[in-house]
Amino acid sequence: MLEEISPLSFTFVTVIFLSIAISKYLRRPDVDSIPTVGPGGLLTSYWGALKFIFCAREMLQEGYANHKGMAFKIPGLFCWNVFLSGHKLVEEMRKAPEDHISVVERTSDILKPKYTLGPEIIHNPYHTPIILHQLTRSIAAKFPDMLDEIQTSFDDNIQLNGNEWTSVPAFGTVVKAMCRTSNRVLVGLPLCRDPDWNDLATGFALSVIKTAIIIDLFPNFMAPVVGTLLSSLPRSMRRGMKHLRPIIEERQKNLDEYGSDWDEKPSDLLSWLMDEAQGEERSAENLVKRMLAINFTAIHSSSMMFTQALYHLAENPQYVKPLREEVETIVEEEGWSKAALTKMRKVDSFMKETLRFDNFAFLSLPRKALKDFTFSNGIVVPAGCTVSVASMPTHYDSEIYENADVFNPFRFANEKQEGEQAWHQMVSTNADYLPFGHGRGSCPGRFFAASELKTMLAHIVVTYDIKFEDGAVRPTNITFGPASTPNMKAKLLFRKRVVE
Ligand code: HEM
Image (cartoon, rainbow, N blue to C red; front, side, top):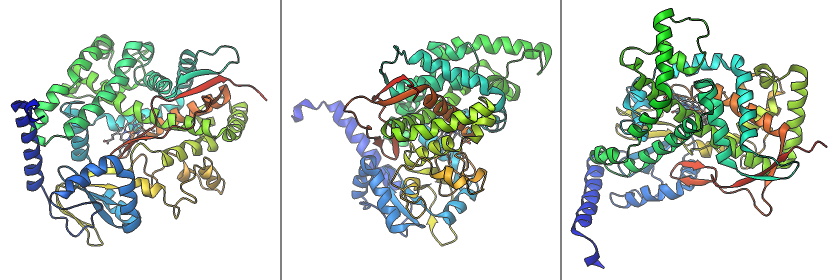
């Protein structure tokens, strides 16, 4: 057996383990005062870190149960991960200055932008206010386009035969619809329907995540080698340039000739980026990189959440009728519009509950302490530790959400009927509802995402009947560390809605 191991692989494995051990030893900050969940000794902590990859949910739940409203820690391969819960600590953390508790540094650590998205995306996020303000403001005007793209993409991807049930891959169908719908507003027609652009946009997101996860398994000093070997950025850029460069050049020509307001200037995210880009960021290459990055943030989180919503709908057909009645009553009075969507409380609540119940991460507000940070109750998070909120146990706390481990799709719709307005909408964040983060760094695309998700849900319930294939039940989520995704291979049966 030993003879089968080549000297090269032996050296490689030894270097990896030594470097992990040294890196861990050198970077171990003093966090003794924070209680540990799982094994936490100098060597056993590696076991704790590995255990977290497979049992994150259970470990976070244990930490929350024993230290609710306080902090606990779980070892990572290269540093300690501190988790918080409770309004007081969450509010203190979100208000901490960036040079103490950093969003940027933690996002960089997670996404490895140098090898995945391009570092300027994280360090010069000029697209964030554009998404938060211009994109959000455009939702009402863009609503007819979004609805049209949702209708046509589901029509194109679910080939119905009379009233027969048709089997389709749930996630694959949703991701195509989400990609087209988002890109209708990001770059417009006809590119939003180009199969190669859609394939690039969806595939790019997956390759970013895969590359970042693999680089993370190695100590920092090995990142340049591993990252360069794995990076799909140059290849994706070549493909992206082929599609976007001619569009950018044409628009740039018009900008140079007529200024920022020429007749028939496209109103989409690419145009708004071109209006705001400064210096180097104006180059076609950097604009393409940013469009790929925005696609990365926009498509997969929304697609995962909508797939979860479809699984809930197929599992609980009794919820279809109240949703249909709500959508049809409002559309009959108002037609399809953003204003009509705002009135669909059950639709909003269904999506909000889906995000609470099946969020794609067990933790929220991932941050890195750049300096020792002391909370008002005396807890010190030493520089170098990561710190985040244990959101999954918060979302499953029955003291916060009645019968929290039951999927109750209209729980928020009922609360709203008691007179409160925006507070209960899915886009409102607070220390108990964290799928979009909370405060600085929270998702700027959530208003757009909510409109897409709710319009899709409204369209699906009035257009189709759906169920699982015979004998199939709701597939369990796939988890890896603190990430949780819906099963991406499961199929659903669709048929043209049979009107009772
Ligand atoms: C259901 C869908 C979505 C969910 C659950 C979601 C969730 C999140 C979360 C949790 C964060 C990080 C917050 C933090 O660190 O505190 C985030 C950041 C971000 N999201 Fe979303 N998101 C969704 C859809 C979108 C869409 C559609 C867009 C773009 C149109 C978008 C753009 C962004 C951007 C640009 C950031 C980075 C913000 C920054 O670093 O300042 N997201 N999102």
